[in-house]
Image 1 (cartoon, rainbow, N blue to C red):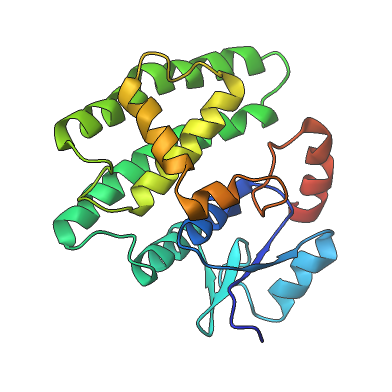
Image 2: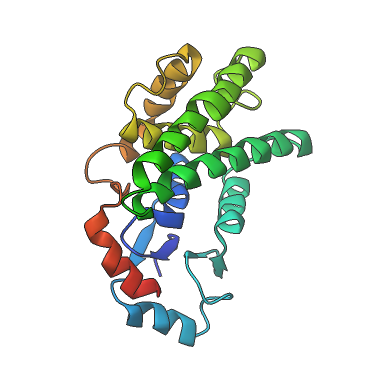
Length: 221
């Protein structure tokens, strides 16, 4: 064993992408074992690797961790991305959970019926512009620091950048009315570990394409 975390999931973003982002931001190298067919998932189930019979699963520190939030919480705690005290952690959790709601809304667009896609996407982008991004613009203004919580990088910053970039894939000018978020995006994107993750050839996954869905359904159904 190399000692690196090992990520078990399909070769797609899904519920593992935020894990990839957080490990990369922490400067942690990891390996990936992709599920390419239904039998790959079945093997993990049958050998007892999956506590609740589902992925994502991450092998780390002698554990086989499942449940995305639990995995992210552990990584954030282990690599000092979870605030300095309980109050900071509470803020981080609130911000992260709000971002997760928006991220989920955006990512589900690809699986909407054809006649519902446009309406679904418009609703998601409207929520980004009028519910979520104004919150983080105000947090940055009121807090007065480069980061959302305290004065150092946390998982909240990482997840905010990830979510901004996902929204911009659908609406490139999504930050037009949010100057502090524009500056935040530029700062974060130039942090060495994140800058490396944003380069071509990194473990960062591209957007899911409709043509990929049948294969994913074959693996997970």
